[in-house]
Length: 367
Ligand code: NAP
Image (cartoon, rainbow, N blue to C red; front, side, top):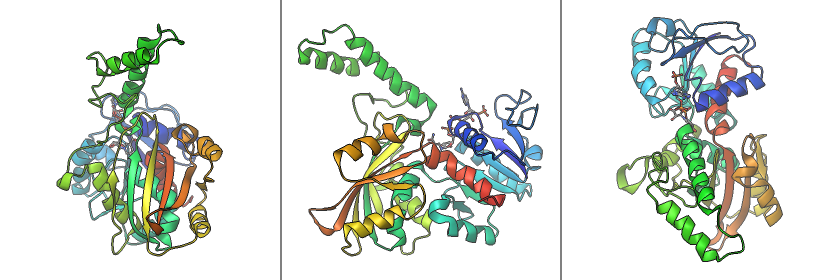
């Protein structure tokens, strides 16, 4: 299978290559690497031997691929996808960007959640597959067991989103802000007045010198309840995606309302979210926990204890892992049909690269 990789050196593309190498996915594949910035240079060696980077705007070269997998970004997809299809290319297009997520011809891929939707799309001749939004994917990876059981009337999700969702520069900015706080407070007496420490931190966060080019506000030592741009009704686009994409991924009819507030916090690569679920009926907690835990092999129900929560249910504990822990499960004071939960996931894995890697494996009959 001649497979063209575009956007392979960005953050998502790098994690994708790392995962494909770890799983032996390049074995038997015929990879071709494209670049928007360094055509003619050396392609990464993933076992295929020395090769040259091709131009990522070369329609003829791209049209020679059976599959194009792109993590390049929405601008590239908007520019090149229509040209490729207009040129008669009918290969399979797999995309990390949001450019085609609302297109009728595109299927959103998250196979532990929607493998039947993917298989039906393949059988119907679908050639365009798109990775969903990271926050939506991680919410469904945690809670799909309840959706499958038809128990979800609506979901309100309040997110705690990592810097990595805004790209590599955002991760660097978060750490640079942490460094600024560390440097500003380094000379203070550890046994000194706590109000002095607090005043230095507050002054540093408010200072013009704090790097805020990406987030436009301090993130270290703070939180930003705004992700992406404004859409209708006071919602952000990130919040809109929660409802639209969750329903499209699972093919839910009628749609299940999903809404809430998306918040950026100072985590590096794991998104967390606190959810309130209105169940269609009151169900014993043990049954709900079983439905969540049995949904697929990567979900873990975490006991509602301080020790288990601190050890397993944090961004720091989940970074780099394919596990999706779900904890803090309990009925709310509003009534037995109101359930709360907290879930965490590595947004560069299930939220970005892994569904694309697995879609390629599904095409090759390996999954
Ligand atoms: P990114 O890190 O900015 O990489 C995108 C492209 O930027 C690279 O492929 C590379 O293209 C170019 N680039 C320029 N300077 C670079 C440098 N110093 N290092 C590496 N690459 C550089 O973008 P991304 O975060 O991977 O996101 C790619 C797409 O996936 C976007 O559409 C994004 O919305 C989507 N997505 C992202 C996430 C996430 O968590 N970040 C999650 C889901 C989906 P050339 O090699 O051609 O120059």
